[in-house]
Length: 422
Image 1 (cartoon, helix red, strand yellow):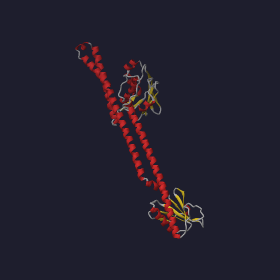
Image 2: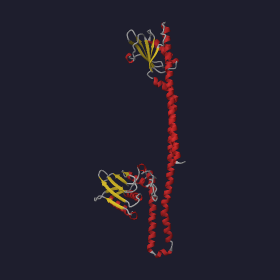
Image 3: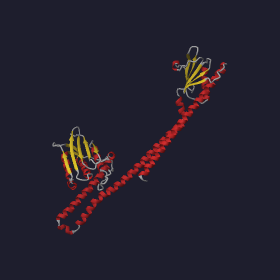
Image 4: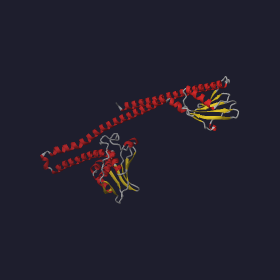
């Protein structure tokens, strides 16, 4: 499956998931609204029954209009035109609410129109407990011209939510499944990318090993010729080629092994005291042939005072070597490479070139293992995509960090920050 097909599939899946969530949310909201209407109807019916029971008990006539008035979604008043005892009202309310399957707790109170006060107020737990010591001031008062009682449901929203428990649980399960599927899709894409990276790594490794092996094989075939012994200079040249290419192979193998150890947290640093100026000059000497071939210019901005440092000299030399190698590789003509050292709060080593540069998107992934920047028209640049990842690994092991500053067509600058050691 192509990357375009995968992106299209992800877009369709994402839109489908959003549609499912929106639809589920819509139906949960509709169900909640229906529960609200059902609660209001049942409450009105229950309160009218209470008013009828009181009228029958007190032998009075109820008004022709509905005695129940809804002040707010959770507050109701009922006109009864007569005084009623607290225990009687509580009994009628509990019985009527139970019949309508309204099991949420409530407050109730009776308004006395003669004294313009709340005659009594209480809180009823539908399990049967009645709390009498409720301050009357905490209950709403509505001035009416006759007796009325009021009912308030403080837990109305919670009660309605409980009625929708199946909907809520199903919604949570659905969202969890969508999150799980998204995670699985992410894992699949990650595995696909790792598979592609592994394939590229094998191809790059094959090319990296093929060239030195071919040179070694060719040199070995020449050395088999007995006449080569008559020309000591040719013998030395081919022996040198074998030695150089063998070191190159050894260096590549060592790099792969070091990265493997670094990923396992097994990398070991062999620290010793050295001078940075000496290390940089020794590193540059190994690039004499490449510098001459590319007609490169090397600018050194090094302090005259020796900068001593306690660290792994071999690994740090490899880090500088990788940065110089990249500067030579990714500069098309006549590279100009500037290497400088600064020291203030921390030690900084800068390697700057005038190469092709790196765009902002690639800079975010630059230090990831196996990642290689697209080189455009430069097709002769080979590698494993391990160099900068190895550099960051070593610098981090020295409690430092490395940063990249670059713009396309304007060159690249790598800055290593290391803590000052005593």
